[in-house]
Length: 342
Image (cartoon, rainbow, N blue to C red):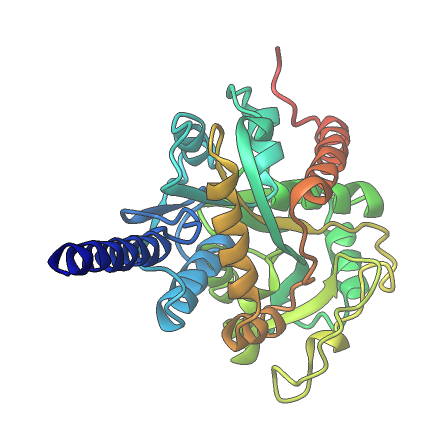
């Protein structure tokens, strides 16, 4: 009887123990844990403070904090030296580091072409195209020019080197557009480079320069305040945003430069890259992060206020676009005589 009880009890205990172990095994085996940052992430801006790239980076930082999209902090760091080369070389030298990302302009292409700095976008990992940025021909609102044509006619009448065009950096997007504008209209400006688009707008308000080709977001506050006049947008279509920004105008009210008889256009990349040598899980984390950022109300509001083209690309689509854009910029730089001498 005792023997039978012990045998029966042992069997029950064994079954219970086996069941318990099975339950523990099921609960102790974690679901697949995707990668996420384990320390603060450095968000490199290869441009000065106040410009379009800096504003976008800080907007992204704020959106992520407000919506709690990351557990670790995202820290914005400006590395503008050498027309952004400082920032690109920093990321290039951080191979395998998933705690560093960079926001890029088209200086991704123009900086190595103009300076000969040993860098190419293929030495980083493309994450996502966030948007494409427009360029607008701006003049001081106190000046009498009612249209882009009136302004260009005045530049022509004054003769070469009489009007000053302000822009961000040398042999970068703003100067490339200025060179294209000169070629299309037979004009010749004095091009004056500044560190960032914010400074460029301030210089135009102060009448230290005659015009700029700032991005919408870089001059919108001065436009809204009635200090600047938007003459034309360098694109083949008007911007789609119809909400009034000033008392009388929306972005959609600005004519294209082609409408104004200036046959030149240009849009600029706003993209995110990581260092080379990162894993698929690490890349997927940031693609997912920026997909979430783009879905927020704050981002959509920013896109409209800044009159961005909201194109979004990742993976092979983004790489294909980058390859085509690199060729386009090589042609533009060669035509303008901006390529570094070998």
